[in-house]
Length: 187
Length: 216
Ligand SMILES: [Zn+2]
Image 1 (cartoon, rainbow over the protein chains, first blue to last red):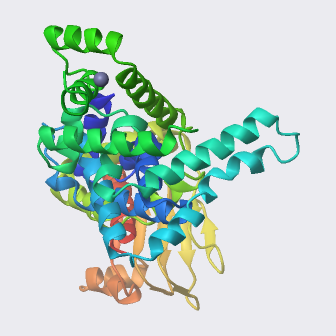
Image 2 (image 1 turned 180 degrees about the vertical axis):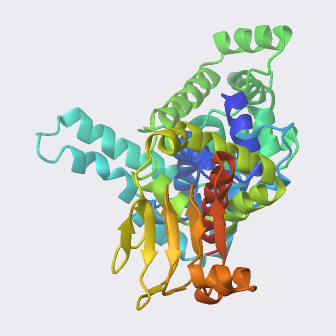
């Protein structure tokens, strides 16, 4: 897949804008997922993910083709999202936790015309709870947890995306995992 | 083994696939004897599976279209114009082949009918298109497979494909005959009598169209 993406990037660099559509199509859910799990609500996540792709396109000449494209793209997305989190007023965090579930409501909407089995209701509640607990983590732990367990990146890749040493990635994952353990042990 | 410091650190190393074999043995032996660490280890593993069980979220349906419509536009257009300017020969060759397969050759050989781009007030007699004395053609005039005689005037360019401009007798008498009929035509006069000239005429026209589009 990386090879096909590299071919597309060559075409984009030559000026073929249409080739970018395949790149967006391939990475849209991954990028959206990173933004959504880190920022907490669907509307802002969509905004951030779009911005990430537009920045990748306008800066495509600066992408080094010897590197992995996904790493570069995820770095743009996480940097934008972390910037947005920093700019938020501190009291917004309380807000975000309440609003943060709207992206998950689509599951209940989808099933609106058919009776939702009890276990699915439970699982939706559980998922909403887990989502909130991830959002309650400080941003530096949140980003490693999202990249590691939701996007399943390797420790090395996370280090490259966040531009921090692998040792730091490990420390943050350990602390994030311990915090979540305390919050989720009674679930 | 110190539970808080050492054992928990080993658990995290285990979960990161970072454990050496001696460390793994050490951890396993400790877990067999320490129920507190066993519980802790169980909770950590469960935490990860809970986080992983969160269903993957998908970008909204309109996402790709929204991104594509928000991209800056210039990049694409400039590129094609640049390409045409840098490859005039390739462009001409490409258009040439397009027209070859597009039936231009067959049109040349099969269609021997006299055609004229403007019919109003013009007379066609024995393969000759006549612009009568009292008629002024407003705009460009194209005559194909016939001769053209201009008794009136043409307010524009004249192109004759596979034909000639016939001069009136009084014009032929004049020493200035070349300039004489130019006087009736305000624009350029092109006579196209060879298939390759005709081709070039099309190529030029098509290219002008392409560039006009590109520069718009
Ligand atoms: Zn212990």
